[in-house]
Length: 498
Image (cartoon, rainbow, N blue to C red; front, side, top):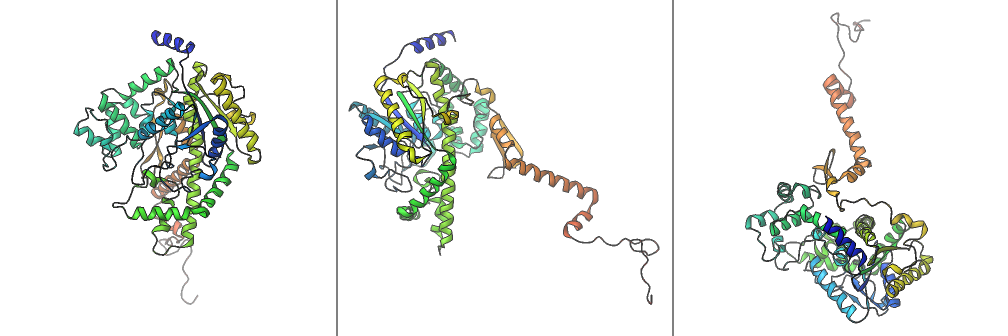
């Protein structure tokens, strides 16, 4: 530990020469593409796409590619080059984006990475992300579908271990729990890709993933994780103004050729046997599977199409919320670590307020260009602007809570809810105290708890009063009680002639 501390002091003082890169993040539909064009023109930059759907050919509308006629001659890399029958994995992106960055630097220009798919950015910008790369399986030959082909060539993985890796998620979780119960608690028991990656690491190296993870976190305390001198922009919009923009954007897609693209995709989808998996490759794009009921109907109805549009809008809003969560909870955590090294390689995230389109030029373009020029001309520590406008200061800084920091292992724990079920009908599982408290405070949980209490009360009444409770629920009258004297409910029956 003393040796690590001295390495930290050395790295804290000494600065290694690194080339510069700019990255732009933000939710879908917030204007990242337009800002990237404005910035590229001002700083002699070229753009690298980090959106996993925009790498596929065509489908410009539903993949949200920036129109060529609006790019103002700025070159775009890692875009529009992958066939629909291919899966595009993170390792291929890292290679292609890395090649593009080196080429752009070699020509004296500035790479501007815009995303998109956030784990692509993490892999590109940060070192030591072995466990983080579990979000995607490694690339395999497109003619082969077995996930076991993603294991590194030359590894010592046995056929029995390959069978486990290719097995159901329940077996993955059980195997990992037996091998490394600490790391198994970090992942959700149904997170197939992360569980599989952790097992791959153990089978290939013989090292416990939890030990490797801990070592990785210790290394992050010694030195910066940034690969480049990194300037990050977060183009941000308030939720209440973003939602109408996202809805209008979907409507614009449908009016601008989106319908033709969806039908073109469906033709390719039907031509394949077996049918493609809509959770993989281009088929997972928002805007295809939402319309499958309409596309597959023998007699398509206008309402089916409108239902598809509404589903697409809902999915787009959900994705935007996820993107904000990733920026704050994951990217923010990684960047916060750079404070330990004085942000000497950058790592500060500057928020640009795109909430009001009327002030876009001064709040986004002008501020962003000013920050970019200061960073590139004078160095990462020379930027004078504040990281956020005053009204958005809550978005960065403050206390950082994460299960990805050193010592976070103590908080890795599964919480099983006895009231709520997941999509498969199994008990709901939350990972970590924070997620559990969010679940316990949710309307869904409270509704299930209330329903459970009513059910228990009903069962208690059935046990206590028997059949009478069931009759009351059906609105039936209980049979009249007769006394020994023939009276019914305390009254003597009327006699004939009375």
